[in-house]
Image (cartoon, rainbow, N blue to C red; front, side):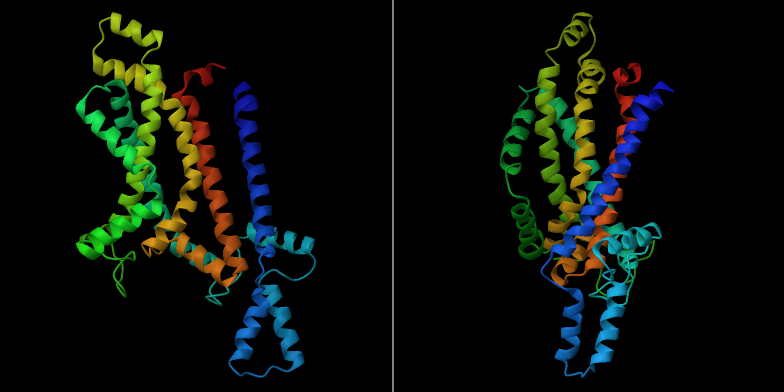
Length: 335
C-alpha cells in the first residue's frame, strides 16, 4: 500500500497530466499556423476553373470545417477534439483526402518504431557495454581507439553523417539503395526475400543512428564508470580477491547503469524527433515523412494525429521504464 501511494500513484497521475497538457498543446499549435486548410482547399478547387455558387461554397466550407474539427468556438473545437480522440478518430487527411488520419498513421507507425526503437535499444546496449569496459580499462589500446573515434563522430551533426553514408554506400559504392523502405511497387510478405530487402533498405538509416547513439552512450558510460570504479565498495571487492570480470559486471557496471536507464527513458522522447531528419534524408516511409507532408500542406488533422500518437507512445514508454526502475535499483524498493 505504501508503494502504491508513494511511488505508483504519483507516477500514474503525472502520466495522465502530461498527456492532457501535451494534447492541449497539440490542439493549439496547428491553429497558430498561417495556413488555413479550408481556404487552401477552396483555392485549389477554384484554381482549376471550377465555378462554385455562393450557396454551394458556404455549404462546402461548413462541411470541411466539420471534417477538420474547426466548427464552432475554440472551446467547442477543443472538446470536440477530445471526444474524437477518445474514439480514435482524427478525421480525414487533407493532402490524402478522404483517407482517415488513423489509417495513414497505422501504415507509417510500424516503419518508424521498427527503425527508431530498434536502433535506440541496440545503440544503448552497445554503447554502455563498450563504455563500461573502456572506462574500467582506459589504458587498453582498443579503448584509446574508441575514444578517438567517438571524439570524431559524436560532435558531427547527424545530417552530415547520414548524407556521408548515403553518398558513400548508395551513390559512389552502390551497395545499398538510395532511399525508400521497400521495392517500388513491391508487396511485403513474410518470406526470406522480403525480409532481406527490408533489411537492405533499413541498413543505412539504422547505421547512421547507431553510430551516433553508440558513441553518445559510450562517452556517458565511460565517465560514470571512471567515477564508480574509485568507490570504496569496488576497492573492497578488489581486496577480497574477486576477479576483474566479476568486479566489472556485478559492481561497477551494475551501479553505473542506473543513470543510464534514466537516460534511456529520456532518449525514447527523441525517437519521433529523430524520425523526421532520418526519414527525409533516406526517404524512409515512416511518421517523419508523414509529419513533413502534414506541415508542408497545413494538414491540421494529420498534424494533431501524429503528435498525439507520439505523446501517447513516448509517455507510455517512459512510464513503463519508470515503473521497472525499482527492479534495477534496490534503494527504491527499500524506500
